[in-house]
Length: 344
Image (cartoon, rainbow, N blue to C red; front, side):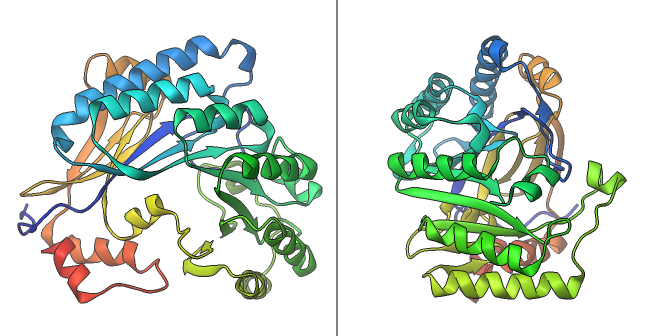
């Protein structure tokens, strides 16, 4: 295996923290998420997992020693199942163990069906600066077909509460849904922009392997129909001041998601938690690693400092391709200088 060229300096470093549980697995979801419906007795599991995350970070410190964390992202699963106390303990230990930029973006994904005012207050007190809400649609029939546990009223209430506590709020929505019409897609887009959040994400529903929809395909709009939906949604968002800066991402000025930008700009990231992935640059290699997916197995493996399930090095011949595969998701593309800095 050939080594990568020596880079002048490592790229920015982000921290991803995976919370693997959700109340209900959605039929389109291929993420590492596991149903946990007994939320009344969740505290013991939450405590064990938080301790495992802290150990995971401690054991990973030699790989990132001396590097500042530019952003933090709690993804899932449904991170908003965790209490503010748990999030505070995690972030407190991150701050104690690693240097963090003073203005680092700290995002937490939330499900409108698992949050209230107290949740948002406690997350803000813990240090979260940005919330990403999994809305998906404002149409109750579509929400039902997508297996969501919230309805349109829950979604709107969740957005209003989030905006009372956070300046930076993202709404995740999807289009090309089962049996969705153009008018329904337009309605979702117009409802989304009416809240005037700083960031919106509109994803084309794709059917992924190992999902319920893959085994039982729903009737989806034709490609031409979904293309018209995409163009129409982009036009509506543009009219309301949202810049289309990445394939599925739209932002008001200076409100782009810094954590995701780091991914797309071929930055580094340390992922901790069940199934989390990392990309880390060293003086002689770029390493990709993934942790065990099963939460119980992950907790057991962390206790033996053996949480890494697989690790590979990016070969020199693949470096340019991997850079472009990420960077070309951005509407503005990339500069030659950036290409040279991150590929050697």
